[in-house]
Length: 222
Image (cartoon, rainbow, N blue to C red; front, side, top):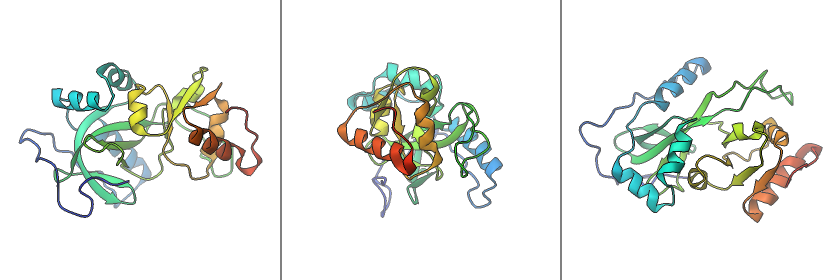
């Protein structure tokens, strides 16, 4: 994943003089509690979508109603961002115009494995994702460690569609699960709480089966 200006200078039109500047999180000190508060601050920073932004997203198959549904549960803003290495981004006017969406954590659950935390807090801003409006496939995260978009749906009691990309998740109005990190972890065990997982592609079906049967965990849903 990379932004369109990775490895070179900025390739986007400079932001207007009245664009909101975002103070970057203190990534160097990296106390986890402070970084969580910084993420929350950044989630509500940036600018509201303009008519041009809505038009661009509409061209990508994301309508205004879908964005409104996402905005009801996850903070969403427009920012300028540039690559920060390792699949991450940082706010910068030298970067690309992006849709920034909060990655919300799941409802509170008990740990499933030795490497899991004591609990997962309900509706916490766990991370941020920046999706370039010009090249949405080149998304990046604010910090490492995001598991999935739409994870709280696992506990909704309803069948959950699983999509491949954040753009498809936007098109679904956030009413889907999009796994961002397929690295083996205890988080995949949370997916077993879903009433039904419905992968939208054969590739996802294979990926999910592999992830859910890892370490001998039986698969209950395809």
